[in-house]
Amino acid sequence: MTRTYLKRRLTEMAPVSLRLFLLAGMVVLLVGGAPLAQTPEAAQDDFVTRTRARAEAGDVETQYNLGVMYDFGEGVPQDDVEAVAWYRQAAEEGHATVQYNLGFAYANGEGVP
Image 1 (spheres, one colour):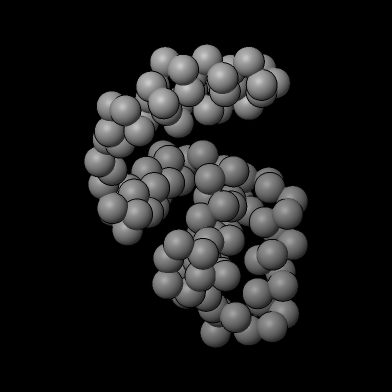
Image 2 (cartoon, one colour):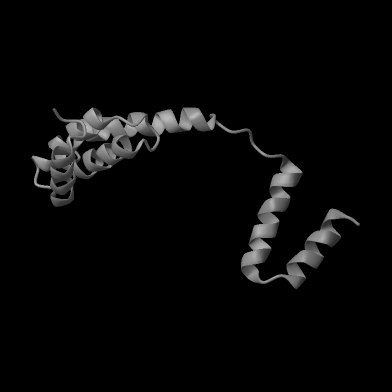
């Protein structure tokens, strides 16, 4: 079978969304997949670096998210002290959910003396 014949048969039989998916897959197979720009670990480090930069710039929602990341060890090592530090910054800006999380940390002695 030739590529043209196969392409024509696939596009005639499949619904439109599936056709586009199959055509994209064929392009990748024919052209060759591009190598990953970076490893997953490097991408994670880049994400954490960008998130930290936004939090340090004063983005309250990002401060909250970074606190949650440290609180649960999602993408970063679990660190209650670091989580409380980010929670405190966002809580001072009036973020209600963060104020609850900060109160919970104080009530349970997590990351605070």
